[in-house]
Amino acid sequence: MGIKNMSRILVVEDEDGLSGAIQEWLQDEHYVVTVASDGLEALKKLRHDSFDFGIVILLHVIQHPRFS
Image 1: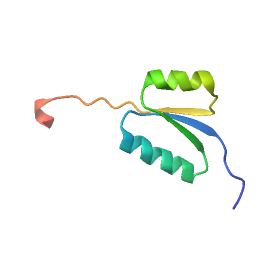
Image 2 (image 1 turned 90 degrees about the vertical axis):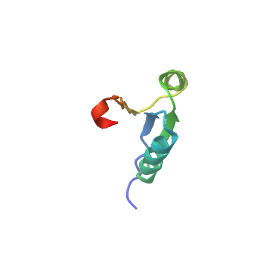
Image 3 (image 1 turned 180 degrees about the vertical axis):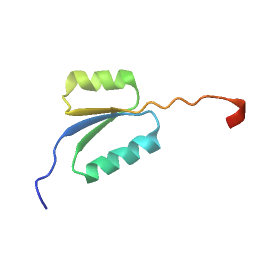
């Protein structure tokens, strides 16, 4: 195996299934991954640690009669 990527990534996502899948995928690519479930938790983690990248997943579901 070649040189491993040890970049540290902070993933912010409140849905456990999605954050777990992203974490697993990034770890398979040899990233060191930390997950925060919301913005407040992410800020706390940023105060105590440093990261090379951050991923924030914003998904706003719009309630519209056509899509119900």
